Image (cartoon, rainbow over all chains, first blue to last red; front, top):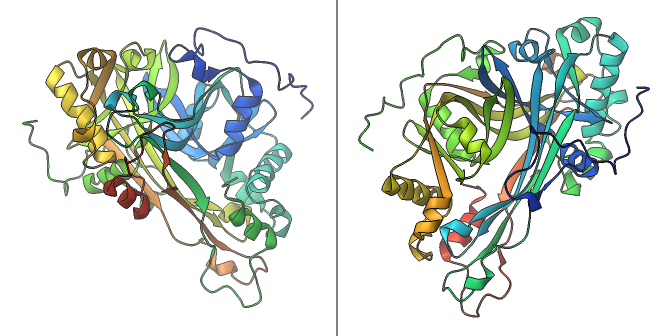
Length: 227
Length: 227
């Protein structure tokens, strides 16, 4: 893409829609922070409106510069409903439970990004293939070239949407419970961290002998990350 | 609550809104399946509409019978925007990446539930306390009674919303890639399972000696579940 993006040090604009109201110390419009959360969370939840009612569909997202992408079956109602419409894409990672001395001081350590824009269908065939390649390569570096090439029919059956990020908010909470002034209350307080990681790979049934798990996938499994 | 719920063996109604269109073999309106996904996923994404535009906010949800609950600051715009409005609450768990021999046959193993209804503020003080107790107890069995009791001010500062589930859809994919007919294509195929679990507890700084991690929390950490 030939777009020139604003530098990652530049904040997203603050508007009525995206202004962080609650706990502003946890909120930010910093591009770098929004991007880091999107990139760490392949799973997103896309919000869209049909006949005035809200829908939230989970799907995978990936990012290139100021654009967030997702895809699905060309016949999907979800994709068609979001096309050319305002959408909200939210990525959230739960990093841990925060246990305070009172119910009120319980919380969650998390990172979340809400991004707003208008979804557009990626029409151009080359651009679509390029976006799908990116989806695979972002998850499994080096895999695309090892795959059976995509057929014309497969490309046709797949729709890709992309959304330029018009506005965005990142929210992060981390650290211990905030009730340090009640540290003498006789109950255990602290954090139970939550970790999402890959478990050992399960080869497909019937795979011929001699096809080993590629090093890049072992590396990914060992990395403790899921992207 | 005195409500009488339909038996869990009874499906949610199928309407235009919630009818499963894509991959109907993966979709269901079965109460038991919807409930199991909600109960396994404390994190949810709530979709709501402000001035015709969609918003998706992550929060914790918990369930009692046919009601889904979430909570937040009484001053939260998110909670006020969802009150008395149609909302969509979606819970999603990524169970693994499915790697096929072609890009097209890549997929995700997942469980997701989309539930629809109208959110109502829980006004009654006792009912609110009861709901918050349930939130804590569902996550950390036995913890509520060990906590410093909730003050009137804390109760006031906390809003609880609940939503009767009018309609719901569960979608599940599991198993290996579907391209067994291409098993001789020379690339590794299979599943990379994703596991979310609790890591060892981190005690809050400054906690007095002699307050040990309760057995119920060690058990939870050892369970491999996050609720």
